[in-house]
Length: 383
Image (cartoon, one colour):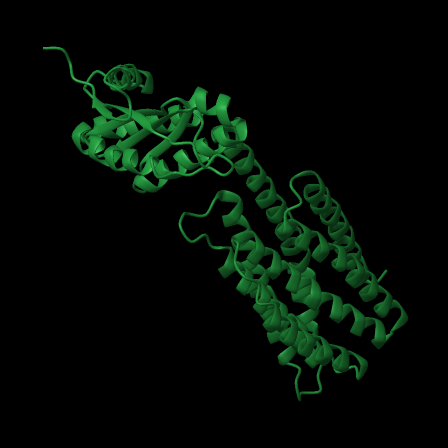
């Protein structure tokens, strides 16, 4: 049996497995656009390998030309998926123009049976696509996760492999020998199966890693307001408290809630109450710095951890928030007027977990309520 057919059969089954895996991931885990693009890419790869095998067996230039078209579209969809995952605008115009030109050129050289040019044009273009995919995969504001690093490496290797294919085909140009194409076939047989399978496995790991991150975020965040829930706040607080003790830095906890929230719900309905919670959470998030922590502790009660901030500075920040709360207007409840109370406590040497701070901040919040609400109170140890 032709060794090329054996390799194509392996790649066909790999593409089939990957297409099924990506389709299942798309259907059952959020129907994300980049997963759909990658599923379509592997689906087209199935057709590509079928056309390629049929073209070799039937010695049909037309089928080889069709396979070239599928390769270009499949590689373009990989790049589209990477852009979609990163939340970046897909350069559709540039991809369509460049892909159409390469597909037409690849089809022409396949039909005229110019093997050196055929081995240069499409692999060279796919190499560029893979290199662009590797660059676009890099996160902007964080480090690579392990699955992302694996896919980045595989994209880079894929680009290097395609460049080697194009270079080996270029050796044949104008020489009239078979040395270049023999090198081309050797490079393809040795590298393509492992790189193709490795890229597929890395892509699945990235999708699985994204799903795990999504589930963890859902576990640690409040779905209504988008801030941390109590569990997420406790996990974040553990690191912040340990860091403050280690470096001798101040840390302040603010516990706050909306005054008369039950009356708001009773008088204007839960839709107005939910809108008040979302608006209050947004004010809190906008008032703190990057690195500070905001969480919903339950009901209308929120907690804020302000790093490298003492109680007095934290109270000043909350004074500004308190003034802004009165400016919130709720849809469907124009007559509602919101106020909030705040209790502030500062980390001391004996605090080891969030509840140690919460106990004192709650007492300060109780003092603010007793003093007439709509104010900020700092916990102070009785003399």
